[in-house]
Amino acid sequence: QVQLQESGPGLVKPSETLSLTCTVSGDSISGDYWSWVRQPPGKGLEWIAYIYYSGSTTYNPSLRSRVTISIDTSTNQFFLKLNSVTAADTAVYYCARRAILTGYQYFYSYLDVWGKGTTVTVSS
Amino acid sequence: DIQMTQSPSSLSASLGARVIITCRASQNINNNLNWYQQKPGKAPKLLIYGASSLHSGIPSRFIGSGSGTEFTLTISSLQFEDFATYYCEQSHSTPGNTFGQGTKLEIE
Image (cartoon, rainbow over all chains, first blue to last red; front, side, top):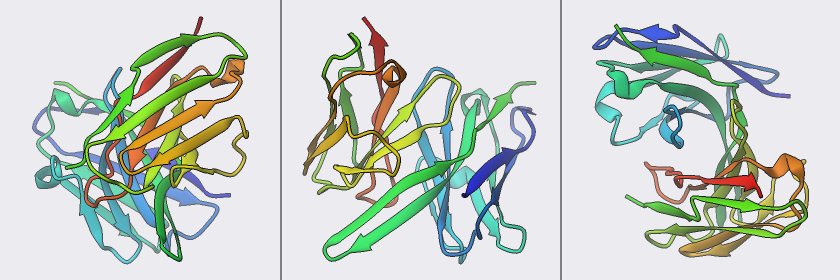
């Protein structure tokens, strides 16, 4: 059974770079898409980016200029870097697997396995 | 960008009640619509994908329907463990797998 675990600093200073790691266990990271989603305190979910195991990336346009997602298949991990952070980036950050299901005339994409989330606070 | 609007934003209901949550897309997304349940302090959990397909292990009282721009999530008989916040997500356009703003379901 696939499990995901986020790790990284819980406190980041304004203007610095937020760096998170998601470690995948129970299965190979190869062959799937992997995502980062965040949730500010008391608010809804916001998709940040996703990456295919081959390294192909897709970013939320609203964050694209500050975000980098990367992957290391040798360690079964993928990563998030968000630079020039402000208090608005304070959130719970989740990593998740984006499953793809295709067939005749359909293409489904959904987040089927999630990490427990890690809280990141941006404050001096 | 495709916008997703859920209604209501919150609702109260009793155990055993039938509840319907609606999600509207700003443009046609065919049936590329997913539903998630989130409890306080926990990660979201996938309930429904492809508008109406029940994810593995999810009870059959959760029913998804709709296509195009209007979708519903029905909980046929509320159980205690169903009180949570529900989010829809469109997966039709990339980039931009946008979520709805959420519907908080509380005990009446």
